[in-house]
Image (cartoon, rainbow, N blue to C red; front, side, top):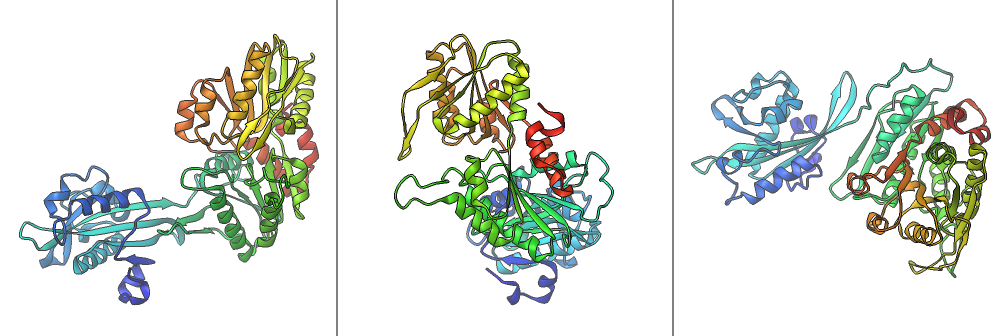
Length: 505
């Protein structure tokens, strides 16, 4: 690796990092480097080895030594974000974007000088603002005579800017809102921003080759009321712990930048299931997460359907706002069930209170009695036991309600018990659709008509495809937007919990 401290001044002015033993992070740069290494013959692969297979998005340039220039041979479209509109056969000196051309020429010179691939990182700046992070690879190629005289390249661009809002932003207030959304919560953040009629604030998230991360705001937050949306579920490539650490560091950066108040909006809060000691020397993870958020400077936390609301509220010394998605589920199932006899079932005794509150709410909306039931469940060392079922479900459509679906085993087990006791139709309802450990396999054979979840957690395309036809997703953006608006203005959250967002049941 070459550090900037050891490079020539002209490279320092152009790049933030240069690496001559590259480990790319982006898809395109990783693929190009693998292709270069697989085609390598001696010092470098030949130009002909790689040019025929650049359909993956890379590009190739041939050196023009007499003009100290480079000519594009293939991949003009792939390199256009740096050079502007160029055609194959054009030279770097003819590119509309002069700074982009200088960056490529300097990097190509370095790769041919070293005889090894070179990877650089830099930030694209437009009109004085950081717009994107760029990872750019250049790998030397040999010509027919064996001399190094061409370059294979690829780039990955991570845009920082959020799209424009669907509505005009509200007039400026004495304490304007800034809303950020981290990682896979970006799509939900955009929906919340549209509900608030504001622009989602841009930020940078950069992953280094050793999996460390850098996250920072790209707009000023001094004296602002800042909300950071980050659902903390585990997913491929990012555990809940990874996301929690990034959230903590981002809140720290906001505090250092002078934010007046910072609210962590965690629709799904990780480590909330371990909220008490069930065995000697057990950790109480909910309290430890609370201490971390308090220590880094969060003023408030908002979560939807925390695993244990009492434990959630008691763990924090800062304000802890516990929202629930019951209004969304009540509105959906009131329409879905109509006058049909119905029952609400808790899949374990721990969720019986949640199920009972929902049963009462649905009964009020439907204006006819709704029965109830519950399953017995014991969990030890990851194994589930308990077969006792109690409740009046015979001849009824049943909604099995829980805060989350993880492995799917608990819900599938409850569904089979309801069918065995005479339920006519069975629906699953859970706020957080984690669908971990092949949950779709556990649910596939269960007698379930629909699985209703919210979008607190970003579902993977693979899970959505496998559950197609039975999966229904309800949006929580209006609920979160209404909560943020009320918190910002000093409105009543208790009233929101009673009525739901914007007059929901």
